[in-house]
Each structure stands twice: as C-alpha cells, then as structure tokens.
Image 1 (tube, rainbow, N blue to C red):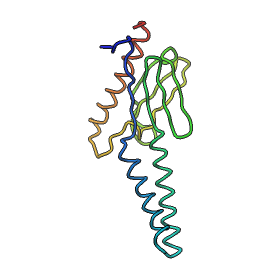
Image 2 (cartoon, rainbow, N blue to C red):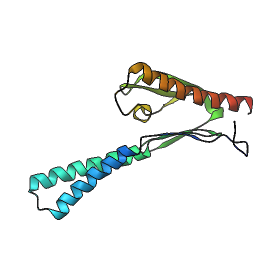
Image 3 (tube, rainbow, N blue to C red):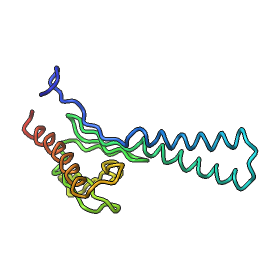
Image 4 (cartoon, one colour):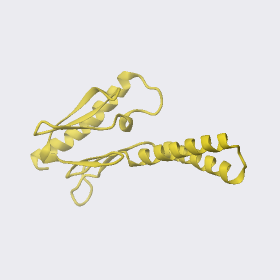
Length: 154
C-alpha cells in the first residue's frame, strides 16, 4: 500500500553501518598510536599504511548504495553513480558470477547493462549459497515489481 501522497517509499540497500564504523576505529587507533606513542619507524609506517587502507575501505563502503524510487534505480559505486529510469530498464536478473559472486544485473532496453557491486548485496556472515540466491531473487523481484508498476502507469 502506498503512503499518503501516492508515492511508494524508496527501497535502499547499503553496506551494514557497523562495517565502515569498525574500519574507522582501526584508522583512529592507528592515528592515536602514532600521535601519542613513539613507535619505531617500521611500526609507524605499518600503522599508517593500515590506517589509510582502512580509511579508504570505509569511504568505499559508505559510498556503495542501491536505491529504487518511483522514478528509477540508482547504483552508486566508489567513483560514479549510474541512474536508470524505469523507462530505460528492460529486465532485472540474478547473474551467478560477477567479480566472483552472484549479484543483480540491470539490463537496459539498448542491450547494455549495469551490474550491482556484489559486496553490496552479499551477506556479511557465511551463508549457504541457496539462501544468498533466494535473497537476490527477492531483491530482483522487488525491483521487477517496481519496473512493471511503472510500465502499467501505477
């Protein structure tokens, strides 16, 4: 059922918020070690490298996002965002192997496609492959339902 105003709420998929938070804690710990202690050069370089790596990974995790609105689908990755209006979207399907994991593929009418980053839709803890595929099928079904509703003019 649509909320007042006639528009469906957005569907949003993101990396769980605790993952970037933990990465930022490692960054802060590495910075604190270098600021308040007097580590050797090897420890200083190692902690700086680990801290910068964790900071970069946290930023990347915060950027990843899949959003479905009444107008279309947005897939935001580290350096770019792709917008697909429902009028350009032909099909949403689950593909078994994109960068080593199953994910969603958004097929356009012109034959091109956009793959959703697998890390965005994969579970964070070990999960049976059949459960992962069922979850991906559920997400694909939600997006397909929105696409069909747009085509019908709902």
